[in-house]
Amino acid sequence: MDIQNNLKEVLADLPLNVKLVAVSKFHPVEMIEEAYKAGQRIFGESKVQELSDKYEKLPKDIEWHFIGHLQTNKVKYIAPFVAMIHAVDTYKLLVEINKQASKANRIIPCLLEIHIAKEESKYGFTFNSCKEMLAAGEWKELTNIRIEGIMGMATNTDDETQIEKEFKSLKEFFTELKNLYFKDEDSFREISMGMSHDYPIAVRSGSTMVRIGSKIFGERIY
Ligand SMILES: *Cc1c(COP(=O)(O)O)cnc(C)c1O
Image (cartoon, rainbow, N blue to C red; front, side, top):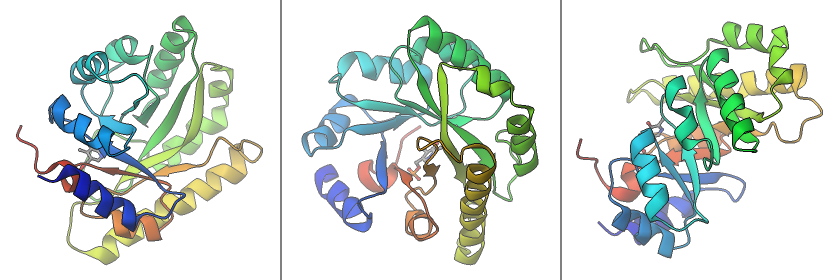
């Protein structure tokens, strides 16, 4: 596995305004160190315990992004250091992140996860439930979180037309939210979409942040 070369290939595909989250979940710290040596600083993890262990062992200038489903009772373990939480899918979770961020004396950047795929999923706001949550306005009192954008995953399919349709719907929804609730907030700017198999489609659909694992680190062994 030539991590440095894989990384170079992925970066060559990305416009300068698209950030790369190198998804290192299930891979050992040695592989992260390889990518780090090549200059990569943003890494994505999806398990709280694994992220905490890696945070302890690796250089402190790494930006750790939590990309998985986050249980409210575990927020406290990552709140002191996590750089961004990608998959906030309930208002309750947002409240808990705010509480733990406040204890850690931090403001934690968050993205709202929107369910755009055809597959059934327990996670993610629908377009409507997300708008209802924002319209209610209570989130504005959560001063230790900052909603910086939205995140979504397309259907796991070879049908590129379908994937593109879903990514474009996320981009349109972002624009709608921007106009409705974040017009004056420069920090509301991220659309986290695109993984190893679909990131070129995500990039041409308006992604600002791609989350790429296997194309950099190889297949994960669960
Ligand atoms: C694992 C994971 C990724 C990376 O997937 P690859 O197919 O390995 O690129 C991206 N986003 C989320 C939310 C993930 O859980």
